Length: 326
Image (cartoon, rainbow, N blue to C red; front, side):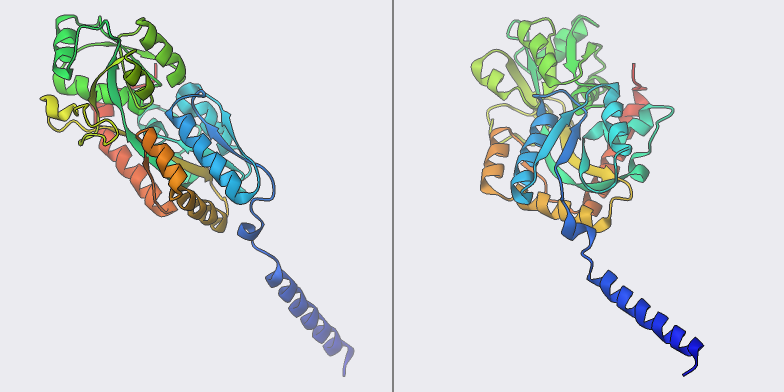
């Protein structure tokens, strides 16, 4: 055999052996997670977004045998947290907890350092949840109609807390103001916890929020109406806003997870499948029901399509009311 042919044969055998060794290597999903992971939340601790993330983190950590920590990075209308995750390594170990502002920010900012549907990969929906319009007990309204009438008679004097421009706590109110023509003064907070403090003290008149149920039950705030199209089974005595003379009113929050772009598809699929798995656990569903949350059950593609639909659904209101960051 000629030397050249022997060299070619040896090279071919070496390449074949190398290909076999490469094929035997485990893929990214089989190695994930190989260290602690984190979920970055764009709001302060204690609110609905934080509660969702911590519930998911706890049970994903139990399932994976590796810690999943929650990192709160409030501020900048969610931009601070979003940019932090955008810069993270695309290996699945860093995820971003997202809600409506993630999809709507491109409509509200002239320039963004990221594009949500280009620079991030959807993972899955954790939950959806309606808000409840609550007022301080001293506020002179026991129904949504009375709230509207009082605001109409006192333009700009009713104060309403929310957790950021474009958040569902903000847009729930904007939808009602748009439908009724009332004028209120809105007050932005970095998260639900500091907003709650001011509503509970009476410094702020009202709030649309999903995590005030304990304060409703204790009588520290008064519930006027839920923002969903149907009543919430956990609080069936609280009527919807729609049924109180505002037909067509419907607003609900959503919370989910995304990962940096270029995160391997098999890793994204694993996280999404494991998220769906924990969301079917009886203890998780029971805790969510106690907080009026509705568990999600989406693939990455389904969650991406859902967020695009939400952006389209709310985009008209954002443009009509010229909603922009302050």
